[in-house]
Image (cartoon, rainbow over all chains, first blue to last red):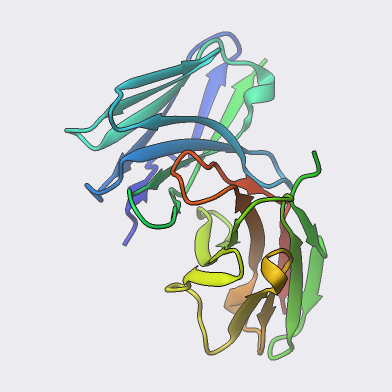
Length: 113
Length: 115
């Protein structure tokens, strides 16, 4: 049962344009969401997060939007740069107890110079 | 600040053999995770430690996988005997604690190939 879904396995964007990566979740208990970025042969690194009490969080070129009613979140990268080419994982946690992070399947972003 | 260290980086074994992976988390991080990432999939949590106690091992195939965290610091993950479907990258991660804002820091992973 895939509780966090990234339906686009890959995405190609021209340098300077906007990249939009999407993520859907099914578990209504999730209330904290994270995006991780992964380069080949490296472990994932934290990128940006958002709490369910917000609908938007921005950090430089990266913005995450959360639509709780639709159980959907998206990561916007503006402007996209070739160095952004990586696999992006959406992840989610539920409240209470110890933080258990559930990951999506990932979207491979290629930014074309 | 030193990151999460894992060894070895790569391992090739034959099926039915045993293998062990080692992880040294970031100093002071109470929570340690082992994830399995099969090619084309997202990381799947195998086991989560809080200090030296297990808080979640619901997805750990306990008939062949075992893990321990010595004195609440380093951890080892063992597979015995290995199967072909165990071929994956094994990621260790650590975080400060149990708050949701305690983001996880990952090591580079160990790529296991079972032939």
